[in-house]
Length: 149
Image 1 (tube, helix red, strand yellow):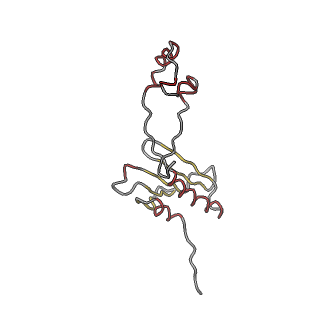
Image 2 (cartoon, helix red, strand yellow; image 1 turned 60 degrees about the vertical axis):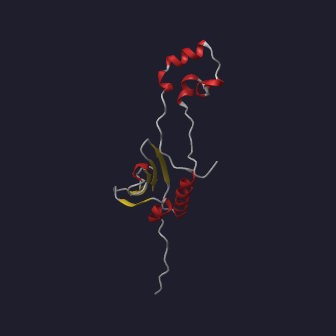
Image 3 (spheres, one colour; image 1 turned 180 degrees about the vertical axis):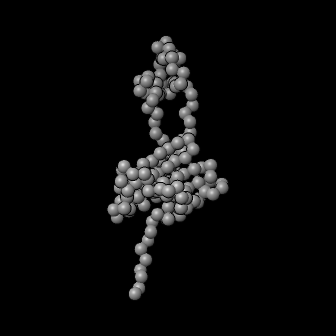
């Protein structure tokens, strides 16, 4: 797999309703009356799935690298990833039961305008927005500076 290739999750809804053969290609299923009756009984199985915005492997590697450092420092403890038709969100929590401290969002509709990546604080303040993910999440990675007295 390439680094820029998105992670595809298999559809499990059709398998749960019609068994594992329902998710196969039409040529792999036997053409019987039972399979044609099953497909006509479930008209939703022929509708195309909505496209989902997701993080690719390279993006997740950058985000999880920062997340791992912050967990090791004891600042962050939990995360959640949400994919929708409009945007993908990586939420960062200090504790599981709280609202997220930060959200790293990917919104492709803003790619030509302000940049598709953004870091949003818990208050809703957009801390940084841009085209390059590493530069955008750098706002969360505070480097220590040497101070001479």
